[in-house]
Length: 147
Length: 147
DNA sequence: TATTGTTATACTCTATAACTATA
DNA sequence: TATAGTTATAGAGTATAACAATA
Image 1 (cartoon, rainbow over the protein chains, first blue to last red):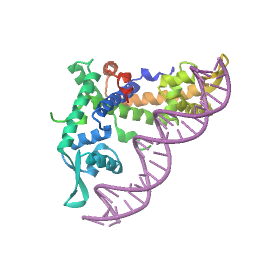
Image 2: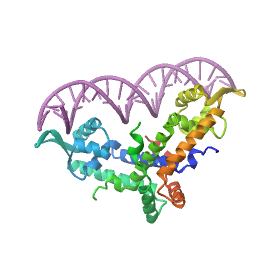
Image 3: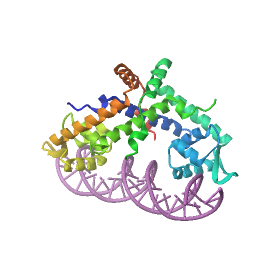
Image 4: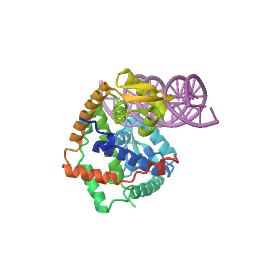
């Protein structure tokens, strides 16, 4: 009957730790001079060229929001857009060598942040944590559609 | 050397699961008709009366943002403000019986969300997860001050 | 002069709809 | 008519500074 304080609840603990972890990673990325959304976009571009629509779907953001991000990445020389000859409506987006280099810096910064975040845990414990987190049910579709 | 995809990194996993967990809890709270920030405020008011300044410090929000939240809670009859006779600058904020009742509904909604989120984990695994999360280093002061 | 609460303002983020060019 | 990308606009959220009352 007594109302549980937020800090006593596993859901809040996970939510808050997740938020602080995200903040720590964003702070680490900022040191590279890139905004977190640019870093995220470069990471998503790493596997290979895609269209903006595909990219937006993968990142779960609206295509219209992606435009400014790609404009900025492109004018910084970190990615390139070119028309798809097969369908001139589409843009093929690709990371540049400079973009890959920036991605290397981002990777280092994130790794450093993770070493700090999870330094109190052994390798085995980190894998345990990963396994447990993977089993948390986060069925976005089931509860956010009705908003 | 190959850049790690976000999904392969424990830091991103924790950050994303935390975010989705928070979204799930917020969606659950919304069913009670209260905005998440009102629910959070009621939870913080449960232990006992405080001043707005104390409350803002506990919730780590700016006192000026708290004003509107308390206005809304108060006009909904869920909390009360009165001047502190000992220091007339201060407002003593206290949850009302109606607020405690609302808190009960919030508690139920959050518990239901947690049952769903962590239903794949045994009680022991949930405690294990709690223990691991508690050992993640999230020293906010060290990295967010310089922003 | 410092502190508590309040109001006002501006800035970021995000969501949405309208527009173009191609199909 | 539908789709890919773009632009424009509005809303929520948040951060900051100035203000009134009290100490």
